[in-house]
Length: 485
Image (tube, rainbow, N blue to C red):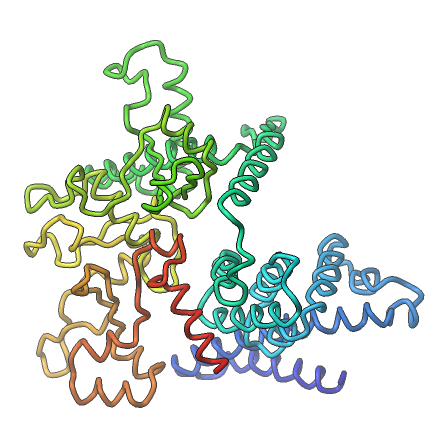
């Protein structure tokens, strides 16, 4: 076993030293992909080895020292970090199939921990066969979902393996109220001593108050950023997203200390922060036990909903509702707050595949460019982070060797008939990653439909928070069911 590892280390060294030789771009990218896959396997195998060594007490029997002492002997690893590795490995060892999936590189170590946590947190009334079925569903879903989304699949898993074990509305309400009470007890704010002209602070707020503060700062930051773009203020545009949030918080402090009115800049502008609550119609009808979701999926208790109804500006979570102006035509280039809100409910974050940059750090991209007559309306706008906005922004034609202008092979976006964005990868991307059948269709047809078929389908972000049947999570569960049968 050790000889195989030593041989693998030599091979990895060969990859590093081989970079000094002439290597084509495609081989460089392929080598990187293989190394990332190898890294997943190594991380998972290390966890399996740690669990096996700890269960056999191998370090103590051979060195008369705990395993964490052996692994930190070089001084390059901290004791708390290694101790946590040993602890997590022991926890994962209780689900051997999940641990093995991480060791073979099928899933990441983070996904393995998420799956184990979800399975173990299922109701105690479930038997081991039901937990194994839940494990299989999550392992299949892990092929296309990151760890944070796997952690949110408890209800979706129960719908398949034990729908009768799901919490009743009364039980869910009691749990939410207990969670809110714990959050209130945990509330805190601490300031560190000044260091090099700065003060670090950290703390904890209950979800409603924390969301209000976050949305207020996000809103002011986004408004100032859009204003800086409109005026081409290079100094303000050079600020990082974190710096813009800090500037927004300073504005809140300045406004709170001012005695003037809003016209003199001494008050926080009305409507700077909004709290969006998503609810099912059935929950709204049953007000006694109604619960809601914030726009990031956080559940609210009935008490929390009542507090918001009393003193918060609520925004209707209905796309295209009569109270929201969602089509500004050609009269305005920048989207209104109502239109940005509608895009947020549809996209949730950067709409580019697998990107999760939050929406307050995204820009709105005109699918049909504004300068070419594209209107400012929901069906022509998508949320993109700065990086992916640049990636999808139409590039000017390039001259080929014969002197003809050719369209640049790049990522493009179009709107489907149902109003959802659809990303079209470059031909070079499909030629390298797509299956042979799709490649043949692209080469023969030479149109966008074959390319778009490679991109993952999307659904309304707001629906994915509820886990509705048409959501992406549900499609993954259906795929898992098909895999088992």
